[in-house]
Length: 171
Image (cartoon, rainbow, N blue to C red):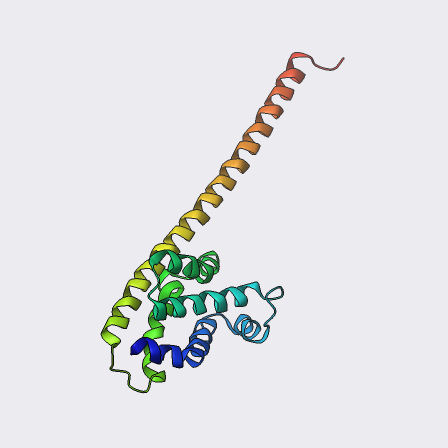
């Protein structure tokens, strides 16, 4: 019964959810994400829309964690790079509870099960966020190591040239 109601109200739930996610971005960014529909001009907005649609459809269809992880990654990866806090990066999942209640005709029917699924989805979203942050820090650490190695190599070359010059001064 609840799945039918969610499917019937899918578009309005999805549009409100997309709007609430986009509203978490700073002013000009939010305006751009809302206005620009071209996935080539606005890949972040397109990824948000696609990921949120997949998550909502997965809740209706009873999808497994694997499907949710892919959809969550579409939404969260960008937020992890943009230094959203963990709460802000995954909070959009919990906003769905309020939106569903506002949109459904009889919001009490089957909501405890949906609330539990959304809570589990929120925990999975946190795992995805942490995995994205770990990848980001690994990339940064590798970059710092590479820079440090380059500096050490240049210092070694300088020392070798200096030693050469001290051993063989010009005439």
